[in-house]
Amino acid sequence: MKKRISLLVMVACVIVLTACGSNKEKVELLNDPYMDQQFLMGTYVRMQIFDEGKEDVLKIAFDRVKALADKITVNEKGSEIDKVNEASGLKPVKVSDDVYPLVKKAYQYSDEWNKGFDLSIGKITQLWHIGFDDARKPEQSEIDDALKLINYKDVELDDEKQTVFLKKKGMELDLGAIAKGYITDEVVKVMKKNDVTTAIIDLGGNVYVLGKSPRKSDGEWKVGIQDPNQARNTVVGSVTTSNKSLVTSGIYERNLTVNGETFHHLFSPETGYPFKNEIAGVSIISDRSIDGDGLSTSIFSMGLKDGLAHIDKLDNVEAIFVTKDDKVYISKGLEGNFELNKDSGYDLVKLKGK
Image (cartoon, rainbow, N blue to C red; front, top):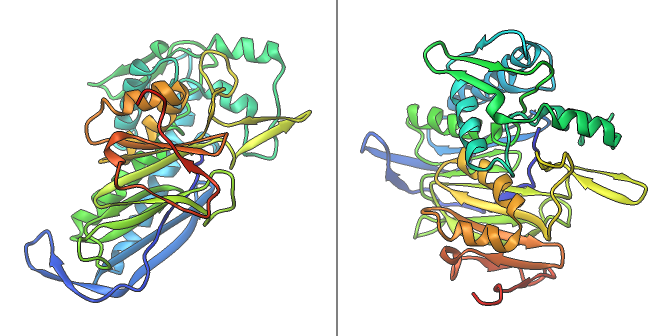
């Protein structure tokens, strides 16, 4: 499963004021938000709600996270994805309304980014198992055998029956590259359904800032981007935004060192090894978290030059790249918005020719 470098939402002492709610009535925003934090999906999930009288929505939101995680994870027996994997080469498996849209979206990303994203990469991620106690560097023969089972085109979806079939025995899905994004978006739906207008949702680095910040007159949240080379709560810089998702993929928080060589957890479906390029971390700002999740991996796989060029072609998507040589690059739409932390030790630069 994919783990994120955390993004830090900097919310200091806010003042009590009113803002328009979804029911077009005045909604009182709290000085100190309702907040809960739980350890789920191998990370800390933290939510804050600023609407007066909406504390009970925290439980509803966390229940939604738990229910989805139980259905999607590949690291515990009994999940729906685990059942699909067990039936590989044998039969289609019907999945729930919660899981089928996620699998279908993962297939769409695989079709678009087949060199950088493949939902059937599970055999490789399980071989390496980076981030777990039994992580190891597999033998080349093991990797070669696993690569034979990685091809998104061998995943058969039936929209009418809502089934998933892995055509080859031994194939395995791993939806970790977009699962947290999907769950984050579902939590946003829970918030809106329960008339929450202002909240911060952080699923271990998949951050969504809902509504307008009560702290600033322009209503924009100030969001810090985690430095991929430092401990948590150390930021490389910040952006201001609202009603947006922020997702980061990086190489330093989850890795494996063997004989002096470090391997991170973002794997190429072509080689069975982690992607090799100059990027240490890439953060995606988008309307939906599932898109930020999928893009963070896919753009990472492209490297700096091609990844930045691709982002600049997309509507309503921005990105921040941190490279291994301590430089920061931003997409065109963030010019004038991104603020570099002067004490970070990084330089904000532009690609030559840009």
